Amino acid sequence: MFNDDVAAGSAEQPVEIHLATTIEQAGDVSNYNFDVDGKLFQIGDTIYLRFMEDDNHDGHGVPVTIRINANGHVKLTRAGENKLQLDFIQGKRVEARYQTPYGLLPIETVTPNLDIQYQNQPLSGNVMVDYNLYAQEQLLGRYQLRLQFTV
Image (cartoon, rainbow, N blue to C red; front, side, top):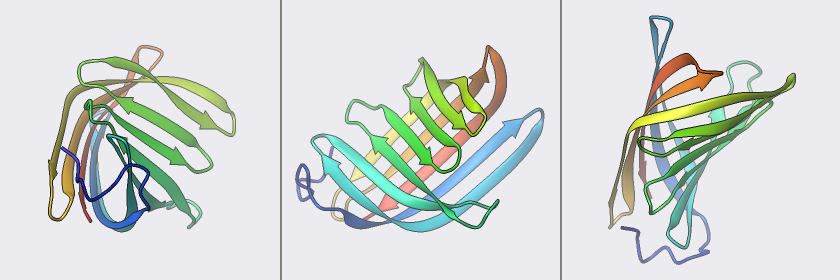
């Protein structure tokens, strides 16, 4: 599943990332697409992708890490002013963390569809996540995340 050339605990490698997100909230649909250079490294059977996402609010980049586990679980972490950790496990409802300057907001993800595909030579992959975001049993939105990466 993973590239044997990327040894456990290996140094970061440059990676090209394309991320497309579709958000449906209260009947409105928004699409976001961007391409960015990032870093990839592997620890054991887990691949980590790190990159800076533009923050349209203040012009500063927001550090993002996507962890892809061999067991099919995906975790997205954004470390800006608002800190967000979302775990995606197909068919499961999972508590998430959303830390704002006003406090911690309890949210949950439900992931009806999750697909991860890898190729070697060069190491590349596609991660497709469809998830619903909830706060206190109320649906906040439906999301589709499409990530492509190539070393």
